[in-house]
Image (tube, rainbow over all chains, first blue to last red; front, side):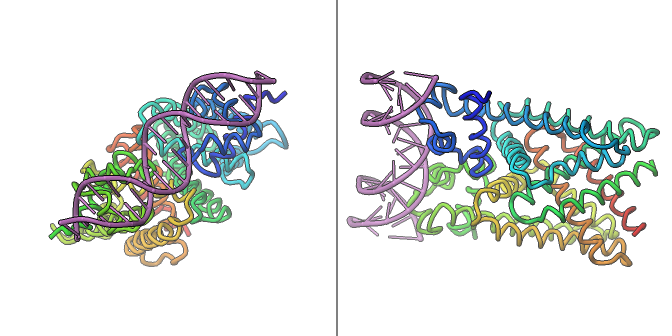
Length: 193
Length: 193
DNA sequence: GTCTATAAGGAGATAGAC
DNA sequence: GTCTATCTCCTTATAGAC
């Protein structure tokens, strides 16, 4: 039941992955979606409207594949769940790449656009708390503040590595290895505190 | 003895800190530098040339303040040197903020602009090796590959935290605390490998 | 080396037919 | 709802005078 709007937003995610938020051209989006530029303005008012709806669309989609992680397959140990949740960002599926790219673009745009900061801060907080929760299941005795700090570092590291991956300076395999070792290092640190 | 080129590049760093790489307009740069657009094209050929030279300029400036760190004041222990080198990125001086902003912009732009990727990868490598060298002086017995991986993580973490700082989601003090703890965690991991 | 003026080509947005 | 055609502004980049 992909409506016209959805069809355009899916195309927008692809175009943003290819050109970035600030490289998105309405005409290219129209071609990608197989519609006219006029129709896009009919549905989304203006360029900013396109962007806002696309970012919303992308967040919903990310929630969907994050949730799907737990449901399928055999039950995992807490450590395995943690690893999986973090490594989810380093897969070469178009959907993950599109989401990572858009997230990085959103983060970079927020530096110059106050309007984006609040949404981004909220989404970041949710992510950090999610990771802190997973860490807490691996080290149940660790204090909450320590878990939160470790989660902040791991998620910030993921963002940093993700940008290096997307900008071509880091292979997926290498990134995944670095993430695993970072989890090791953080867990070891939790044991000592 | 600031030459005209230098004057333009300093202005470019300020404009990029304000508008981003993709928000940089040659006309605004000209106004900021107090010169004409024509002169800018005379010196830098085209928009990409401006960007490339600005990246270079920023890296040199960062190296300068990185180098200046060691010279002044009392001699530091290897661990103190490492901490200082990493914490250098989290100061609220205009110069540091400009450098961090520009670096983040260039990283984000490189995702969509192949012309920037090579320079950026080279600059990243230099940085990683510098940090690996400092780590090696703290843990002289650690294997080079292990040091390199730790340096990759620490620098990627710095990039991630830096973006959060600049996009308003993280205070400088908090960022500095997280960096210190990350160094702890990485050093502890080096001891176990 | 530096400026002024302007060509040339995007890119966002709208009008009006169907 | 959807398309075609087009208007207008903005931006890069160059030409030519000084």
